[in-house]
Amino acid sequence: MFEQTSRDRIVVQFTGAEAGAEPLTWGQKAILGDMQDSGDQFSMGGRIELPRDCTVDDAAALLSGLMGRHAALRMRLGSDSAGRPCQAVAGSGQVGLDILTIPDDADAARFAAELMDAWPAERFDFRRDWPLRMAVIRQRGACLYLVWVLSHLAADGGAHVLLGDLIEDEAAGRAPGEDRRPHVLDVARSEQTPKLRQLSARAMQYWEAQLRHIPAQTFGEPAHEQSPGGPRYAQARFSSPAAHLAVRAIARRTGTDASRVTLAVIATAIGRATGVAPLTIKVTVNNRFRPGLADVIAPVAQNSVVTIDATGTSVDEVVARARGAMMTAGMRAYYDPDDLREVTAKLDAERGYPARVTCRVNDQRAMTMGAGAEADLGEVAPEQVRRKLAETTLTWLGPRDHMHEQLNILVEPRPGVVSLHLMWDRWSLTTGQVEAIAREVEAVAVEAASDPAAPTRVPGRPNATR
Image 1: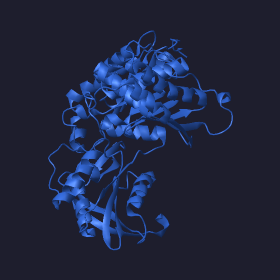
Image 2 (image 1 turned 60 degrees about the vertical axis):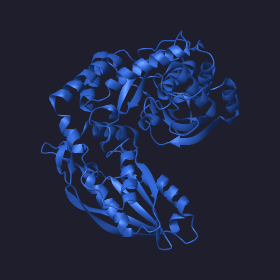
Image 3 (image 1 turned 90 degrees about the vertical axis):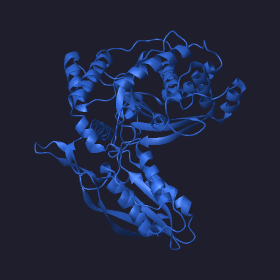
Image 4 (image 1 turned 30 degrees about the vertical axis):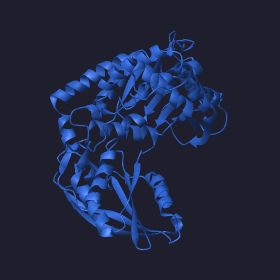
Protein backbone atom coordinates (compact mmCIF):
# COMPACT_ATOMS: atom_id res chain seq x y z
CA MET A 1 0.00 0.00 0.00
CA PHE A 2 2.86 2.40 0.78
CA GLU A 3 4.20 2.05 -2.78
CA GLN A 4 0.95 3.46 -4.24
CA THR A 5 1.01 6.53 -2.03
CA SER A 6 1.75 10.04 -3.27
CA ARG A 7 3.99 11.91 -0.83
CA ASP A 8 4.33 15.68 -0.63
CA ARG A 9 5.81 17.91 2.05
CA ILE A 10 5.01 21.43 3.14
CA VAL A 11 7.16 23.68 5.33
CA VAL A 12 5.61 24.79 8.62
CA GLN A 13 6.96 27.82 10.51
CA PHE A 14 7.03 27.85 14.32
CA THR A 15 8.03 30.20 17.13
CA GLY A 16 8.44 29.37 20.81
CA ALA A 17 8.92 31.35 23.99
CA GLU A 18 11.90 29.39 25.30
CA ALA A 19 15.29 29.07 23.64
CA GLY A 20 18.87 28.41 24.64
CA ALA A 21 21.44 25.72 25.37
CA GLU A 22 21.73 23.71 28.58
CA PRO A 23 23.43 20.47 29.65
CA LEU A 24 21.57 17.26 28.88
CA THR A 25 19.01 16.31 31.49
CA TRP A 26 19.54 13.13 33.50
CA GLY A 27 16.70 11.50 31.60
CA GLN A 28 18.26 12.43 28.26
CA LYS A 29 21.60 10.97 29.32
CA ALA A 30 19.84 7.82 30.50
CA ILE A 31 17.89 7.22 27.30
CA LEU A 32 20.91 7.99 25.12
CA GLY A 33 22.83 5.37 27.10
CA ASP A 34 20.04 2.83 26.62
CA MET A 35 19.95 3.63 22.89
CA GLN A 36 23.68 3.06 22.63
CA ASP A 37 23.52 -0.21 24.56
CA SER A 38 20.53 -1.61 22.67
CA GLY A 39 20.98 -0.16 19.20
CA ASP A 40 17.31 0.92 19.36
CA GLN A 41 15.97 4.49 19.37
CA PHE A 42 12.66 3.55 21.08
CA SER A 43 10.64 6.04 19.00
CA MET A 44 6.90 6.24 19.72
CA GLY A 45 4.06 6.53 17.22
CA GLY A 46 0.51 7.82 17.50
CA ARG A 47 -2.45 8.94 15.44
CA ILE A 48 -5.74 10.79 15.67
CA GLU A 49 -8.74 10.81 13.36
CA LEU A 50 -9.38 14.24 11.91
CA PRO A 51 -12.81 15.87 11.53
CA ARG A 52 -14.40 15.91 8.08
CA ASP A 53 -13.75 19.60 7.49
CA CYS A 54 -10.06 19.53 8.48
CA THR A 55 -7.66 20.96 5.90
CA VAL A 56 -3.93 20.73 5.40
CA ASP A 57 -3.67 24.28 6.71
CA ASP A 58 -5.47 23.19 9.90
CA ALA A 59 -3.04 20.33 10.37
CA ALA A 60 -0.11 22.67 9.77
CA ALA A 61 -1.48 25.01 12.45
CA LEU A 62 -1.66 22.12 14.91
CA LEU A 63 1.96 21.17 14.19
CA SER A 64 3.13 24.79 14.42
CA GLY A 65 1.34 25.21 17.75
CA LEU A 66 2.85 22.02 19.22
CA MET A 67 6.35 23.00 18.17
CA GLY A 68 5.89 26.46 19.67
CA ARG A 69 4.42 25.19 22.92
CA HIS A 70 6.93 22.46 23.80
CA ALA A 71 10.62 23.30 24.02
CA ALA A 72 11.54 19.60 23.80
CA LEU A 73 10.15 19.47 20.25
CA ARG A 74 12.49 22.31 19.22
CA MET A 75 15.53 20.58 20.72
CA ARG A 76 18.54 19.19 18.91
CA LEU A 77 21.77 17.80 20.29
CA GLY A 78 24.79 20.07 20.18
CA SER A 79 28.17 20.51 21.88
CA ASP A 80 29.19 23.03 24.49
CA SER A 81 32.45 25.00 24.55
CA ALA A 82 34.26 22.01 26.09
CA GLY A 83 32.98 19.64 23.41
CA ARG A 84 30.51 17.90 25.74
CA PRO A 85 27.02 16.96 24.45
CA CYS A 86 24.33 19.50 25.28
CA GLN A 87 20.82 20.34 24.15
CA ALA A 88 20.06 23.37 22.01
CA VAL A 89 16.46 24.61 21.91
CA ALA A 90 15.57 26.89 18.99
CA GLY A 91 13.28 29.88 19.46
CA SER A 92 11.95 29.57 15.92
CA GLY A 93 12.41 27.54 12.79
CA GLN A 94 10.79 25.33 10.17
CA VAL A 95 9.54 21.75 10.26
CA GLY A 96 8.21 19.54 7.48
CA LEU A 97 4.63 18.19 7.40
CA ASP A 98 4.20 15.18 5.14
CA ILE A 99 1.02 14.89 3.07
CA LEU A 100 0.35 11.26 2.13
CA THR A 101 -2.35 10.82 -0.51
CA ILE A 102 -3.58 7.23 -0.64
CA PRO A 103 -5.57 5.50 -3.44
CA ASP A 104 -9.33 6.03 -3.48
CA ASP A 105 -10.01 2.36 -2.72
CA ALA A 106 -7.46 2.03 0.11
CA ASP A 107 -8.48 1.37 3.70
CA ALA A 108 -7.46 4.65 5.35
CA ALA A 109 -7.70 3.38 8.93
CA ARG A 110 -5.51 0.39 8.10
CA PHE A 111 -3.01 2.60 6.29
CA ALA A 112 -2.78 4.92 9.32
CA ALA A 113 -2.27 1.97 11.66
CA GLU A 114 0.44 0.45 9.47
CA LEU A 115 2.21 3.79 9.12
CA MET A 116 2.08 4.28 12.89
CA ASP A 117 3.74 0.88 13.31
CA ALA A 118 6.35 1.28 10.55
CA TRP A 119 7.37 4.93 10.78
CA PRO A 120 9.06 4.74 14.22
CA ALA A 121 11.66 2.41 12.68
CA GLU A 122 13.08 5.34 10.67
CA ARG A 123 15.94 6.68 12.75
CA PHE A 124 16.40 10.27 13.89
CA ASP A 125 19.63 12.20 13.44
CA PHE A 126 19.55 14.02 16.78
CA ARG A 127 21.91 16.79 15.64
CA ARG A 128 19.94 17.51 12.47
CA ASP A 129 16.30 16.46 12.93
CA TRP A 130 13.58 17.82 15.15
CA PRO A 131 12.36 15.01 17.45
CA LEU A 132 8.80 15.09 16.05
CA ARG A 133 7.59 13.89 12.65
CA MET A 134 4.03 14.35 11.49
CA ALA A 135 2.01 13.33 8.46
CA VAL A 136 -1.52 13.93 7.18
CA ILE A 137 -3.25 11.02 5.43
CA ARG A 138 -5.42 12.34 2.63
CA GLN A 139 -7.91 10.49 0.45
CA ARG A 140 -10.22 11.90 -2.24
CA GLY A 141 -9.13 15.39 -1.16
CA ALA A 142 -10.13 14.90 2.48
CA CYS A 143 -7.66 14.90 5.40
CA LEU A 144 -8.56 11.80 7.43
CA TYR A 145 -5.78 11.07 9.92
CA LEU A 146 -2.84 12.75 11.59
CA VAL A 147 0.05 10.35 12.31
CA TRP A 148 3.08 11.30 14.36
CA VAL A 149 6.37 9.85 15.57
CA LEU A 150 8.07 11.18 18.68
CA SER A 151 11.68 10.50 19.59
CA HIS A 152 12.24 9.03 23.04
CA LEU A 153 14.92 11.70 23.48
CA ALA A 154 12.11 14.28 23.61
CA ALA A 155 9.69 12.45 25.92
CA ASP A 156 8.75 9.12 27.44
CA GLY A 157 5.50 8.85 29.39
CA GLY A 158 4.87 12.50 28.53
CA ALA A 159 3.84 11.41 25.04
CA HIS A 160 0.26 11.15 26.37
CA VAL A 161 0.45 14.89 27.11
CA LEU A 162 1.41 15.55 23.50
CA LEU A 163 -1.48 13.43 22.23
CA GLY A 164 -3.82 15.22 24.64
CA ASP A 165 -2.67 18.56 23.26
CA LEU A 166 -3.36 17.40 19.72
CA ILE A 167 -6.87 16.27 20.57
CA GLU A 168 -7.61 19.38 22.65
CA ASP A 169 -6.34 21.80 20.04
CA GLU A 170 -8.11 20.03 17.21
CA ALA A 171 -11.40 19.92 19.12
CA ALA A 172 -11.16 23.57 20.08
CA GLY A 173 -10.16 24.63 16.59
CA ARG A 174 -7.35 26.80 17.91
CA ALA A 175 -3.60 27.12 17.86
CA PRO A 176 -2.13 26.64 21.34
CA GLY A 177 -0.68 29.55 23.28
CA GLU A 178 2.29 29.58 25.56
CA ASP A 179 2.43 26.55 27.84
CA ARG A 180 2.93 27.20 31.56
CA ARG A 181 4.21 23.77 32.50
CA PRO A 182 7.92 23.21 33.24
CA HIS A 183 9.89 22.44 30.09
CA VAL A 184 13.06 20.57 29.28
CA LEU A 185 15.36 23.59 29.86
CA ASP A 186 13.81 24.08 33.30
CA VAL A 187 14.55 20.44 34.13
CA ALA A 188 18.15 20.78 32.93
CA ARG A 189 18.71 23.86 35.07
CA SER A 190 17.14 22.34 38.19
CA GLU A 191 19.38 19.28 37.94
CA GLN A 192 22.44 21.46 38.38
CA THR A 193 21.22 22.81 41.75
CA PRO A 194 22.83 21.62 45.02
CA LYS A 195 19.51 20.10 46.14
CA LEU A 196 19.26 17.73 43.20
CA ARG A 197 23.00 17.06 43.13
CA GLN A 198 22.60 15.80 46.72
CA LEU A 199 19.64 13.67 45.61
CA SER A 200 21.85 12.04 42.99
CA ALA A 201 24.57 11.42 45.58
CA ARG A 202 22.09 9.64 47.87
CA ALA A 203 20.92 7.52 44.95
CA MET A 204 24.52 6.46 44.35
CA GLN A 205 24.81 5.16 47.91
CA TYR A 206 21.85 2.88 47.20
CA TRP A 207 23.23 1.74 43.85
CA GLU A 208 26.63 0.97 45.33
CA ALA A 209 25.06 -1.18 48.05
CA GLN A 210 22.99 -3.07 45.48
CA LEU A 211 25.87 -3.65 43.05
CA ARG A 212 28.73 -4.41 45.42
CA HIS A 213 28.01 -8.12 45.88
CA ILE A 214 26.23 -9.13 42.67
CA PRO A 215 27.77 -11.68 40.28
CA ALA A 216 29.61 -10.56 37.19
CA GLN A 217 26.50 -11.36 35.12
CA THR A 218 23.08 -12.41 36.37
CA PHE A 219 22.98 -15.79 34.63
CA GLY A 220 26.72 -16.50 34.57
CA GLU A 221 29.26 -16.05 31.82
CA PRO A 222 27.85 -16.62 28.30
CA ALA A 223 28.83 -19.97 26.80
CA HIS A 224 28.88 -20.15 23.00
CA GLU A 225 28.65 -23.92 23.03
CA GLN A 226 25.35 -23.72 24.92
CA SER A 227 23.55 -22.61 21.76
CA PRO A 228 25.49 -23.69 18.66
CA GLY A 229 24.48 -22.15 15.37
CA GLY A 230 21.94 -19.51 14.52
CA PRO A 231 21.57 -15.92 15.73
CA ARG A 232 22.81 -15.16 19.21
CA TYR A 233 19.75 -13.15 20.32
CA ALA A 234 16.13 -14.27 20.16
CA GLN A 235 12.68 -13.08 21.21
CA ALA A 236 9.22 -14.40 21.97
CA ARG A 237 5.84 -13.15 23.19
CA PHE A 238 3.90 -14.86 25.96
CA SER A 239 0.25 -13.91 26.45
CA SER A 240 -1.86 -15.19 29.33
CA PRO A 241 -5.40 -14.06 30.17
CA ALA A 242 -5.31 -16.48 33.12
CA ALA A 243 -2.23 -14.81 34.57
CA HIS A 244 -3.94 -11.42 34.18
CA LEU A 245 -6.93 -12.52 36.25
CA ALA A 246 -4.65 -14.25 38.77
CA VAL A 247 -2.51 -11.12 39.20
CA ARG A 248 -5.70 -9.12 39.73
CA ALA A 249 -6.76 -11.53 42.47
CA ILE A 250 -3.36 -11.35 44.20
CA ALA A 251 -3.31 -7.56 43.91
CA ARG A 252 -6.73 -7.28 45.51
CA ARG A 253 -5.88 -9.66 48.34
CA THR A 254 -2.53 -8.09 49.16
CA GLY A 255 -3.48 -4.45 48.55
CA THR A 256 -0.65 -4.13 46.03
CA ASP A 257 -0.75 -2.69 42.52
CA ALA A 258 -0.62 -5.07 39.57
CA SER A 259 2.81 -3.88 38.44
CA ARG A 260 4.55 -4.93 41.66
CA VAL A 261 2.61 -8.20 41.84
CA THR A 262 3.75 -8.96 38.28
CA LEU A 263 7.36 -8.19 39.21
CA ALA A 264 7.17 -10.56 42.19
CA VAL A 265 5.65 -13.28 40.02
CA ILE A 266 8.36 -12.83 37.35
CA ALA A 267 11.16 -12.97 39.95
CA THR A 268 9.66 -16.18 41.38
CA ALA A 269 9.31 -17.70 37.90
CA ILE A 270 12.94 -16.89 37.03
CA GLY A 271 14.03 -18.46 40.31
CA ARG A 272 12.07 -21.64 39.57
CA ALA A 273 13.30 -21.93 35.98
CA THR A 274 16.97 -21.01 36.47
CA GLY A 275 17.73 -21.36 40.18
CA VAL A 276 19.06 -17.80 40.30
CA ALA A 277 17.97 -16.41 43.67
CA PRO A 278 18.07 -13.88 45.18
CA LEU A 279 17.60 -12.06 41.88
CA THR A 280 18.90 -8.56 41.16
CA ILE A 281 16.89 -6.90 38.42
CA LYS A 282 17.18 -3.66 36.51
CA VAL A 283 13.82 -1.90 36.42
CA THR A 284 12.52 1.23 34.72
CA VAL A 285 10.96 3.80 37.05
CA ASN A 286 8.57 6.52 35.95
CA ASN A 287 9.83 9.62 37.76
CA ARG A 288 6.70 11.65 37.03
CA PHE A 289 5.59 11.41 40.64
CA ARG A 290 8.31 13.95 41.48
CA PRO A 291 7.49 17.66 41.86
CA GLY A 292 7.48 19.49 38.54
CA LEU A 293 7.83 16.37 36.38
CA ALA A 294 4.22 15.14 36.10
CA ASP A 295 3.40 16.69 32.72
CA VAL A 296 6.76 17.84 31.42
CA ILE A 297 7.57 16.93 27.83
CA ALA A 298 10.99 15.39 28.46
CA PRO A 299 12.35 11.92 29.16
CA VAL A 300 12.31 11.46 32.94
CA ALA A 301 12.08 7.67 33.36
CA GLN A 302 15.35 6.14 34.54
CA ASN A 303 16.73 2.76 35.48
CA SER A 304 16.86 1.60 39.04
CA VAL A 305 17.93 -1.70 40.52
CA VAL A 306 16.12 -4.00 42.93
CA THR A 307 16.94 -7.30 44.61
CA ILE A 308 14.09 -9.73 45.30
CA ASP A 309 14.54 -12.95 47.28
CA ALA A 310 11.95 -15.59 46.41
CA THR A 311 13.50 -18.47 48.34
CA GLY A 312 11.87 -20.37 51.16
CA THR A 313 8.66 -18.39 51.48
CA SER A 314 5.20 -17.80 50.02
CA VAL A 315 4.35 -15.88 46.87
CA ASP A 316 2.41 -13.38 48.98
CA GLU A 317 5.56 -12.70 51.00
CA VAL A 318 7.53 -12.13 47.77
CA VAL A 319 4.84 -9.65 46.72
CA ALA A 320 5.35 -7.82 50.03
CA ARG A 321 9.12 -7.86 49.53
CA ALA A 322 8.77 -6.58 45.97
CA ARG A 323 6.46 -3.79 47.09
CA GLY A 324 8.92 -2.56 49.73
CA ALA A 325 11.95 -3.02 47.51
CA MET A 326 10.35 -1.17 44.60
CA MET A 327 9.38 1.73 46.83
CA THR A 328 13.03 2.18 47.80
CA ALA A 329 14.22 1.60 44.23
CA GLY A 330 11.77 4.21 42.97
CA MET A 331 13.07 6.81 45.39
CA ARG A 332 16.62 6.17 44.11
CA ALA A 333 15.82 6.28 40.38
CA TYR A 334 16.46 9.99 39.81
CA TYR A 335 20.17 10.65 39.41
CA ASP A 336 22.91 11.81 37.09
CA PRO A 337 24.01 8.84 34.94
CA ASP A 338 27.54 10.28 34.96
CA ASP A 339 27.58 9.68 38.73
CA LEU A 340 26.53 6.06 38.19
CA ARG A 341 29.35 5.52 35.70
CA GLU A 342 31.81 6.68 38.33
CA VAL A 343 30.33 4.31 40.93
CA THR A 344 30.41 1.29 38.64
CA ALA A 345 33.96 2.07 37.52
CA LYS A 346 35.04 2.22 41.17
CA LEU A 347 33.29 -1.07 41.98
CA ASP A 348 34.75 -2.77 38.91
CA ALA A 349 38.24 -1.77 40.02
CA GLU A 350 37.65 -2.93 43.60
CA ARG A 351 36.01 -6.23 42.65
CA GLY A 352 38.27 -7.09 39.74
CA TYR A 353 35.31 -7.81 37.46
CA PRO A 354 32.35 -5.77 36.18
CA ALA A 355 29.24 -5.12 38.26
CA ARG A 356 26.58 -5.68 35.63
CA VAL A 357 22.88 -6.33 36.12
CA THR A 358 21.98 -8.29 33.00
CA CYS A 359 18.33 -9.04 33.77
CA ARG A 360 15.83 -6.26 33.05
CA VAL A 361 12.08 -6.11 33.67
CA ASN A 362 10.34 -3.08 32.16
CA ASP A 363 6.64 -2.84 32.98
CA GLN A 364 5.43 -0.49 30.29
CA ARG A 365 2.01 -0.35 31.96
CA ALA A 366 3.56 1.58 34.84
CA MET A 367 4.22 4.50 32.49
CA THR A 368 0.51 5.01 31.94
CA MET A 369 -1.27 3.64 35.02
CA GLY A 370 -1.01 4.88 38.55
CA ALA A 371 -0.06 2.71 41.49
CA GLY A 372 -3.68 2.36 42.52
CA ALA A 373 -5.12 1.85 39.05
CA GLU A 374 -6.25 -1.70 39.86
CA ALA A 375 -7.07 -1.28 43.53
CA ASP A 376 -10.83 -1.94 43.22
CA LEU A 377 -11.12 -4.96 40.95
CA GLY A 378 -13.84 -7.09 42.44
CA GLU A 379 -13.58 -10.75 43.27
CA VAL A 380 -11.87 -13.12 40.84
CA ALA A 381 -13.14 -16.66 41.23
CA PRO A 382 -10.71 -19.59 40.73
CA GLU A 383 -12.92 -21.05 38.01
CA GLN A 384 -12.63 -17.77 36.07
CA VAL A 385 -8.86 -18.18 36.06
CA ARG A 386 -8.96 -21.85 35.08
CA ARG A 387 -11.30 -21.19 32.14
CA LYS A 388 -8.74 -18.80 30.67
CA LEU A 389 -5.84 -21.27 30.73
CA ALA A 390 -6.77 -22.60 27.30
CA GLU A 391 -6.19 -19.13 25.78
CA THR A 392 -2.49 -18.92 26.69
CA THR A 393 -0.15 -18.40 23.73
CA LEU A 394 3.61 -18.48 23.28
CA THR A 395 4.86 -17.10 19.96
CA TRP A 396 8.47 -17.33 18.82
CA LEU A 397 9.30 -14.03 17.14
CA GLY A 398 12.66 -14.87 15.60
CA PRO A 399 16.10 -13.30 16.02
CA ARG A 400 17.18 -9.88 17.29
CA ASP A 401 20.19 -8.01 15.98
CA HIS A 402 21.53 -6.77 19.30
CA MET A 403 20.99 -6.91 23.04
CA HIS A 404 22.70 -5.49 26.10
CA GLU A 405 21.17 -7.77 28.77
CA GLN A 406 21.08 -11.54 29.03
CA LEU A 407 17.32 -11.39 29.59
CA ASN A 408 14.99 -8.47 28.95
CA ILE A 409 11.27 -8.80 29.73
CA LEU A 410 8.85 -6.10 28.61
CA VAL A 411 5.46 -6.25 30.30
CA GLU A 412 3.33 -4.82 27.53
CA PRO A 413 0.22 -2.66 28.03
CA ARG A 414 -2.23 -5.06 26.35
CA PRO A 415 -5.76 -5.25 27.80
CA GLY A 416 -7.00 -8.41 29.49
CA VAL A 417 -3.71 -10.32 29.43
CA VAL A 418 -0.29 -10.49 30.99
CA SER A 419 1.72 -9.95 27.82
CA LEU A 420 5.47 -10.52 28.07
CA HIS A 421 7.88 -9.67 25.27
CA LEU A 422 10.90 -11.79 26.16
CA MET A 423 14.31 -11.12 24.61
CA TRP A 424 17.36 -13.17 25.54
CA ASP A 425 20.94 -14.07 24.80
CA ARG A 426 21.02 -17.69 23.59
CA TRP A 427 24.60 -18.01 24.84
CA SER A 428 23.32 -17.33 28.37
CA LEU A 429 19.88 -18.94 28.47
CA THR A 430 18.49 -21.83 26.48
CA THR A 431 15.18 -21.64 24.65
CA GLY A 432 13.89 -24.24 27.08
CA GLN A 433 14.78 -22.09 30.07
CA VAL A 434 13.06 -19.05 28.58
CA GLU A 435 9.92 -21.07 27.83
CA ALA A 436 10.02 -22.36 31.40
CA ILE A 437 10.25 -18.79 32.72
CA ALA A 438 7.19 -17.78 30.69
CA ARG A 439 5.16 -20.85 31.71
CA GLU A 440 6.14 -20.43 35.34
CA VAL A 441 4.91 -16.81 35.33
CA GLU A 442 1.44 -18.18 34.65
CA ALA A 443 1.85 -21.12 37.04
CA VAL A 444 3.06 -18.96 39.94
CA ALA A 445 0.23 -16.44 39.48
CA VAL A 446 -2.47 -19.10 39.15
CA GLU A 447 -1.25 -21.04 42.18
CA ALA A 448 -1.09 -17.93 44.34
CA ALA A 449 -4.42 -16.50 43.16
CA SER A 450 -6.44 -18.97 45.23
CA ASP A 451 -3.94 -19.80 47.98
CA PRO A 452 -2.39 -17.04 50.14
CA ALA A 453 0.13 -19.59 51.45
CA ALA A 454 1.20 -20.86 48.01
CA PRO A 455 4.97 -21.55 48.21
CA THR A 456 7.41 -20.11 45.72
CA ARG A 457 9.20 -23.46 45.31
CA VAL A 458 12.39 -21.61 44.34
CA PRO A 459 15.41 -23.89 44.91
CA GLY A 460 17.46 -21.17 46.59
CA ARG A 461 20.80 -21.75 44.90
CA PRO A 462 22.71 -18.52 45.69
CA ASN A 463 24.30 -16.52 42.93
CA ALA A 464 27.99 -17.11 42.46
CA THR A 465 30.26 -14.10 42.69
CA ARG A 466 32.03 -14.81 39.44
